Length: 275
Image (cartoon, rainbow, N blue to C red; front, side, top):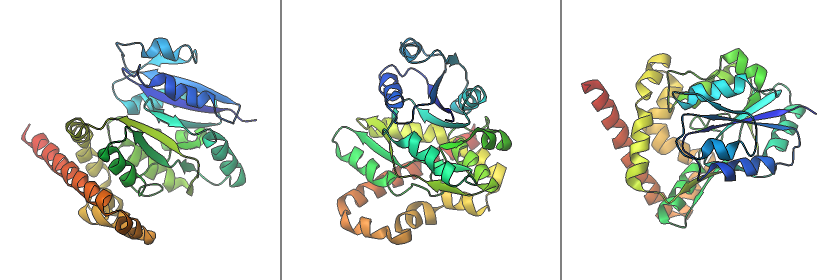
């Protein structure tokens, strides 16, 4: 049975790391290697991680370099990457392996992402919004053969934020991808709007580099960052508009968040050009 390597990137994640690694240990697929790549944590993250795996490393400066470092050391035939605030439902790895065995031509797999946290309105809005993105240009492959990772050269370490989009499109250039059914859960806790927008603004700082790499006229860049698809197309295609109509309050909250994120993105680009 082929080994699968799961790479988890961390930085001061003592509140989340045990939950994340426990979910990996509870996978129905038995041959899994856990690799934790930390970035100079000052809390108990590495101490907790070492109770789950001896493969705990320190690497920076950003998560793209951490992911590359982890996958390069992976002993598995296939690999996947997670953030420390994510957990896997029990059948994720097994379904990924089964899907690739059934269709060896596949170069990567999307894993549906469900946002969870407290019972606040904004967490419900985030969960609603994220449900539209699975398998779209807003998503990114998360599980792949290690040979595919090596062929595309891993993540672009000059990008922080859109590095997963960049990786995804290079994987798709090699061959077909697919979406599994078993989800992962993204634990966003209690969503503080200010903190959320500051995080989005930080990651938006790499968007100019991503645009330069692929060209501002590139059709996929325009879908990911343009008004038409990002604010309308992704929510309307394939009959998804019915969900907007069925949940008007969540829809209104989602568009408010998207509007604020858009302002944060424009503010980041304007500030970057002034600096």
